[in-house]
Amino acid sequence: AYVDGRLTPLRDAHVHVEDRGLQFADALYEVTAVLNGKMLDWPHHIARLRRNCAALFIDFAMSDAALTLQARRLIAVNGQADALLYLQLSRGTAKRDHGFPANPRPTLVMTVRRFDFHQRTAQQKTGVKVITVNDMRWRRVDMKTTGLLANVLAKQDARAAGAFEAWLVAPDNTVREGGSTNAYIVKAGRLITHPLSESILPGIARATLLRLAREAQIPIDERPFSLAEALAADEALLTSTTAPLLPVVRIDENAIGTGSPGPMASRLAALVSAEITAQTGW
Ligand code: PLP
Image 1 (cartoon, rainbow, N blue to C red):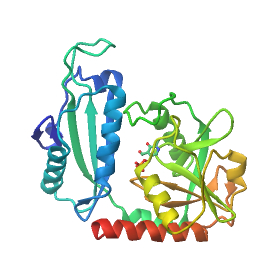
Image 2 (cartoon, protein in one colour):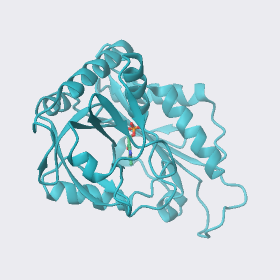
Image 3 (tube, rainbow, N blue to C red):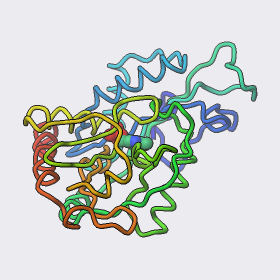
Image 4 (cartoon, helix red, strand yellow):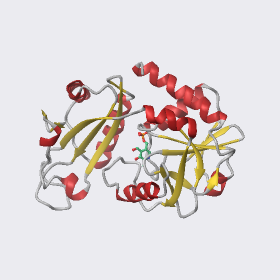
């Protein structure tokens, strides 16, 4: 792990009990895929982190070059070819008080943990099941903060139901996104996904998918879609750093389309996988 300037074995990696990340979830995070030892879409993760720092007034002085160097060093020392790089940046450590401390010094921690992306290749063939739950999160989920309790509960419901993901449904019955993934449906050859707003996380994998779809001249509608529309869709899918593209074949107890991965999911999966190979050789 990397903790506040030092590399240390994971078992010795600690933050202070008064770290504001711990006490208030006053912290941002990023999860980046490492494939063949190379970080996927790293500049986009840094850019999102910087945007969130600005939104939360976290003064993170480390340069992009220094951050990249530290991340690369950690990946190299860790030695795993396929892994997830987890980065967490809190406002810092201070005596507990809700308002910002006078001169906060942000705490940066990073870990690299082995991750098996091959399991996703198998899931791409079969497709995955999702359940639906009410979206109980706060109103600024576009910021990637560690305040994830509503997501944790949703993902646990999914796990208990034997599903891969829980789709978070708004009071007006629109599907926002998954507990840790972005959500899409396909109808009459069009790819439909919730527009960027304060009520979804702007996924890096989402941006990649939409760019690749646009380049392939697949029509895209960035608009809210209802749960009823999702149940009547031809196909459904999800994306994230840890699941670059998975077909969704069941929502709650309903089969979507034929109940097997459809042609759009296969086409998009091929585009995504070519992009990953181009960037990392994986
Ligand atoms: N939506 C939520 C709520 C998430 O937590 C995540 C990732 O953790 C995503 C979407 C996907 O984002 P990305 O593609 O950047 O991994």
